Length: 397
Image (tube, rainbow, N blue to C red; front, side):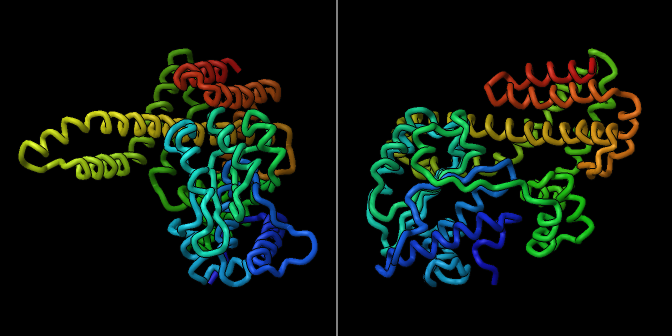
């Protein structure tokens, strides 16, 4: 049986720090701590997409609940329930939409102020803490400034830049920086944990550019591979201004279709559960009246689901843009004869042909156009406008 750290790929230094802190936390609970403690009440996990920010936070939360001196054994009841999301003292904030609102954060902070139910630690894991609204951040800050006894806040953000997390919250947290794991480490975990064949795992790990979750999807999902192939065909399709707009529409539509598939089951089950709770299918005057009065709740649910769909679409589009940026990176390193491996080995012939045709400067401009598109969408520019502008810039070079 693997311990709770097994899926945190290529992060040996971070794991060592967290192991020591979990051990100190266990000694605090038993009253046997001596000397300075490695434990503190608030942590920030930073790193690029796929580096394992939320994996690290969940593993640390499990180690805090570990019944074997905080070792994170992965075998005890505390580890199992924490990793499975069912532990009473571990709470997760995962934004459904584009932001985490103040009401949700206030409710969480209030619940976190209670004592741990099993005498260990309350752990509050905020995934995508960079999506906190200003008011939600202020509510969290107050709790971090005056932490309840044995409550630990674990925040996941891309960086400690003020655009991702407020300076005041950052100043009160210990930062655990994570790096993009090497492809070999990602391939190893796919083979060991998911049973992927070594050659497929090696290809998927390289193509996913160190993103463990995406590598797993590429290895096991034929639709994900087809979407990637369509994205990597974009540079060949840009033969004129009309083709640019066609390619932009195709990219947006593919992201929307991927998103719709991803959220459909959740949306249906949520609506069914709410309607059942409100008495749908009942008979009599009371049941009919209850459903009429439920319009507001159904409207709120639909609003949350639209927000989640928007976020899912943007995430799908961003994955496509990362693949596209990888292609132009391959062209640039081929052009410069850099001693590094290409990302997309299966399109090496196309990137080599482009390297013969384009100058280094024009290739770099194309790469910058993709990165500028990602940034524009992150700043809430309408995706269609941002992608169309990118396609035109890619065609012009």
